[in-house]
Image (cartoon, rainbow, N blue to C red; front, top):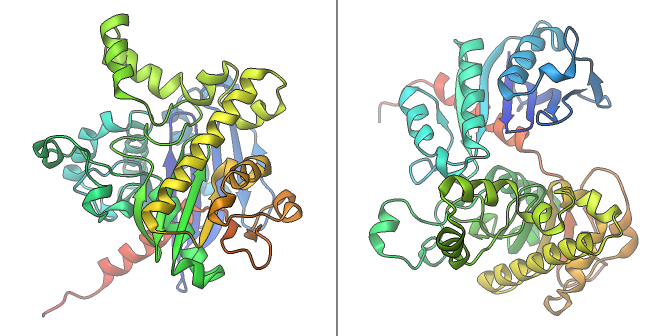
Length: 404
C-alpha cells in the first residue's frame, strides 16, 4: 500500500509516493511537473536515484499548459513509474485553513465547500490545491483524502501575535493573523530537535526563503509568531509579492489610479516583489547574476527586510538561540545567508565562511564553534510531513472505537 502526496500550485505540481509498511512512511518516488506557465517539464526522482526529466510522450510541451493536464498526466503515470502499488491515501497541501481547521482533516463535500470559501485569501494557491483534491478523488475514489494546512501549525498564537488593531467584530469574523508555510516549519522544528536539542528547546527563528518567503519564531518547537498574516501577501518581500505594505498605498491606488480588487490582486500577487522591484526577474539566481543596479537594489531590499524580521521575531522570543535557513533561497544562496547574518551581529549571530559556502544538500551548521547563536541550513520536506499525517490518519481510522 502506498501514500501519495500532492502539492499543486499555479505553475507547478509536486508529488511524492511513499510506502507505508510499518515503521513510518518510506519515500519511493518524488517528482515535479514544473514550468506550467512557460516551459513545462516533468521531473522524476526514484528514491536513491538522481532526478531525471521524463519525456512528455505523445504531445508537444505546448499542450501541457495547465494544472488539470499536469494532474491527469501524473496520476495516469503512477502505475508505470511505481508498478504494483495501490494508492491507499492521498495527502494534499492546502495553503489556507482559516480559523476552523487547526489540524489535518479528511476531505468530504462539506470540507471542500469550506475550503472553497477561503479561496480569495490565497488566490495563487487555494484554487490549485483544491483542483488537486478533486482530481485525486476522481482517480482514487476509494482512497482516504487528507487536507494538510499551512496555517494549522500557527494556531494557538497569543493574542498579541494573532490580532490586528481593528474592531473586535472583524477578528470574530476571521480577520486575523494566520501565518503560512506551516508544513515547512513543522518539518524544521522536528529536524532541529534531532540535530540540536538545546536550540530546539529554546528560541529559534526559521527563515523559509523561496518564491514565497516568510519567517517564524519558534519557542520550544511551537510557533509563537510569523511574518505572514491574514493572507500570503504580508511580511517579507517575495518573488512576485511585496510583503509588508502600508495599506495607505492601496487606498491611494484605488482613489488615484482607479484600481479595483481584480487589478490590485494582479499587482500584489503577480507583479510586485523581486520581480516588480527589479523589473527583471522574480528569481534570486537571475538577480545575483545580473550587473544591473536595479537587481542589486532588489536583493538589498530583500535582505534588509529579512534582517528586520529576524530582529523583530527575536524580540518576540526575548532572545535567540538558533537561526535556521530553509527553502530554495535559504538552502542554496550563501550570499543571502551571509548578508543577513552580517547585519545581525548585535544579536550574537556569526557564520563560518567555509561552511556557509559549501554546496550540496543536507543539514549543516554554518556558525563557528562557540558562537552564542547557532546558525543552521536545514532542507525542508513538506511531502514527508504530509505523509506522516497520512499514516497517522490511517492508523486512527483503523483503530477500534473507544468505549470510554
